Length: 441
Image (cartoon, rainbow, N blue to C red; front, top):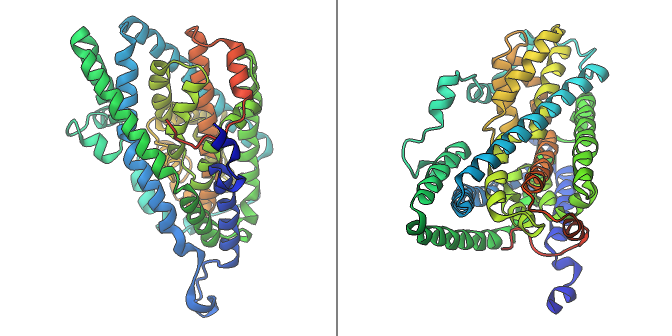
């Protein structure tokens, strides 16, 4: 403990990440990617060439996400023992997810209709070059309900752990946990083995997270260097509306929920500062998943509840993505002068509730989900995606940040419903400031 107090400020991980974000923005602004090579800086260097640093860090994290989710879900469910309690927690979790997700979609629709950021663009979709987003449109083509359900079934038991498909990982984890629970006493050695494996995985993650400043620096330098800040002027209205909607959702909706639980949403944000800074730099809430799990357990949530709610929330409780989906569809309709009736907008809400499920919180996932939503709303031309492709990266940070905060609040809500949280203890823990590294077990 004495060593932690004596640790210099520059040795704290979240400070290093914050410095890396600032340096990445600076390098991106000083060495932008230019199309005209004659105008390139001396040596031809551009900040976009630092992209492998960010990609490499995110890939290191992603290789552990599915195994960590598998171990966390299996251990959480199997250690419950009472399958009736599992069903009760699962039902409460899904009810909460769907209620809050609907509110998030509604806020996106409301703000887009009130502020109308797309009015006056007068863009002809037939004149748009959809080539840069064609591969994303293909990935986002709408699946039928049968295709979606069949996709949940992996080709082999280990396939989800190799491919990183979160929904498939959840499926095999739940089946494994139920099988272990059915074994009773004979299943306890398996539970202990899964627990030991999770400790090993968290240990590996703790090592990887030390590279976060390098990854964040590369990701931010690439983003600013590739897309620039000046090119955003004509789309700042959409970005402003989206950020405003996300702030309203976090402060008002999640803030009221937090107050009902007996703590401040701002204290929760401070409690998760290391994880939020990681998300800010990488545009992916997956990089903060291990740290979120540990922080929720330390706040007083039972390991079993955290093991069920947090991984499930990464596929079913993407509040930031939901706000983005509804707002982006209405914005594109306004920008292309495509009228959307109230009934059509409500249908967008229902469709987005389905397409957002399984949208893993990785960089670009929200844009692919938007393509899937537009594919199911034929009145808005899908080629209009090219309008916002250039700024999507700048909105992905806000999506991921909102998703992370939403899942933290959801975990605390379900734990409170289960009577696991003592409010004074919870309040004290969230008021406590800590410099413990992200992902530390």
